[in-house]
Amino acid sequence: MSADQFRAWRRSMGLKQKDAADLLGLKKRMIQYYEKGNRDGKAVSIPKSVRLACYALTIGISDFDGKVFSKYDPSKYKEEEKPELPEELLPEAEEPNSAEEESV
Image: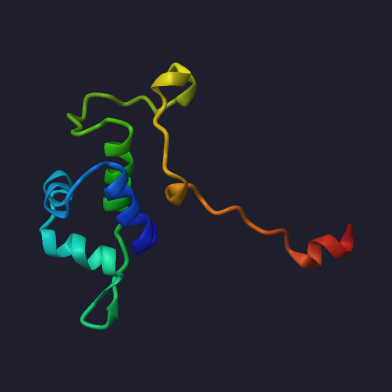
């Protein structure tokens, strides 16, 4: 998740930086670093735990009690219940490798 994707996620959720920090269990300053992409000139990457928490919040999970052990199965949700992710959060499509194209 890039800094721009993180900012897009927060905005798509309608959250202020302070609100996002509270939901993610972080300080507002960390949200600012993640959105800027650096801290004092050094690159800042968004930890996997934060990326997963963002996803959980997106699909409506705000806490985990440890009692549910089944995997998330999107096919179990009605189409209208599935969360719509903003385009900025969707994975980028990979371009075909030119070497692979030549061998075809």
